[in-house]
Length: 616
Image 1: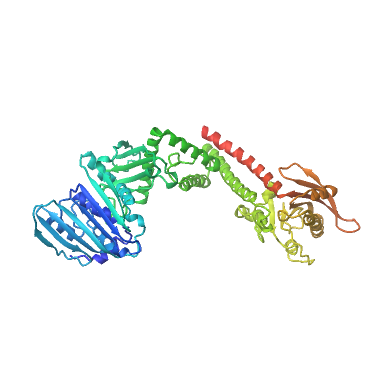
Image 2: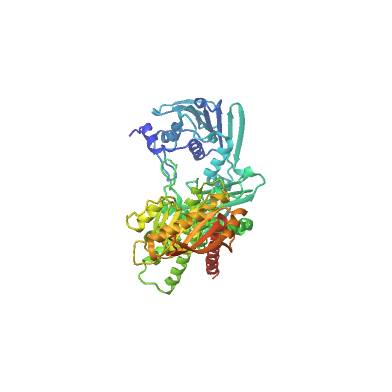
């Protein structure tokens, strides 16, 4: 049965990369007992890739009749380690592949491999000569390479080592010397690299116990050495499959150690044949691959702990940072992940474990003693997570300055034109930050952000507007209870914000606004208001401080500046009705720094709890 090569290319190599050309050619050369493999690349200009020429040659046994027959028939393989499709990758990038091969030291086979290849070839007798094969590839089909590194000797050497280290090292152990020569001439500039199996480092071998008994015997082959040049630093972590190495990201790029060359190869008979037909990807299930990565990472961590205590010490610092930064997850971090997996992955795994424990406790019908203790711990962790969120809000507030608009301050406390209700407390928890003023305001009934006074009154009187008042308190809280229930006493909190950096004259209007709010709200609430709290957030100067003191305000303890005054506000000229107003005039620093101090106290208590639990 004939195979449509064009269709086969689409099916098996739709996601190939240019470097696959080297992998396929080298693999076939080694299968043909080659000990020397040469890559020769020439290109005048990256802008004229149509002139790219790649020549691959080896000293293997050549295309004798048997090998040519197998080459001519796709999927004609005898071993599990071969797939019979790799040669198609040449045609993904070149229209013409000229092949010249010497076999039995006396015959030469010449043919062109292309999309219409039909086994035609020329075979002729020649004078006694060394066996070997040359592939000359021309007529580049693409508009770009993917990345220019694909034709640079240093990159080619690195990627060949990553993919053939297992094969190369096996040759070294069998005292078989293999040399790979890589030469390029690009834009008239020549460069080269060499791989010599005699120069490969000797590996140490660690047998790994698979506690889940999912795989046959697993061995870790590794070599670690310090290097003096940054460009010599390199880490290879790969799975050995069918004498090829398949890179697996075990150590995240952010954790790659400088001044070390590290090679880790994981080998097991269980991995053999676990690649797709095009040898592009491992054909291992996600669940199995996750397990393999865990086994691999744990083995690497044990080696590094034993041989390189300085790296382990650095990882311990990273662990301490995670515990300090995310105290609610302390004890959930996988120690062997830290310093190897990316921080985002370490956090995700810890968070997932935390969520699983939460789900277990919440779904339990009855809690035994151990589960009850666990529920308390989980509650404390959930609180710590919220406290950390508050800390981030405070951090943002500390970054505000006089260049920021009033709206920037407003939105960090409560988003402009928003409403928050006690019934949606959990939903609004990470949107409404009135706690920066005082934690008792977390028990609010309703918060109106930048609501017109007419809207406030409309909310209170269920739509019966009694006054066309267009005053605009920045934030209004109906603190403690339902303002629509005429039988209940309520507390009201009003917040007025002023942009940072304005002078005393503009700030003084805050007091007038607070007094106005007091009178108007008191009239509509009549005798239902039991306390009224007013906060004016301003910028202080000496003139304004003097004005406040002369107005009966007294300074309070704070990390910033706060002035307080409690006074009667009369609702009419005859002083027949009045309400007590508790007014705070404070600067932005007082609001932020005092909130920070309270928050850090909570965080310290929770951290000490988690640390004590870990020690036990």
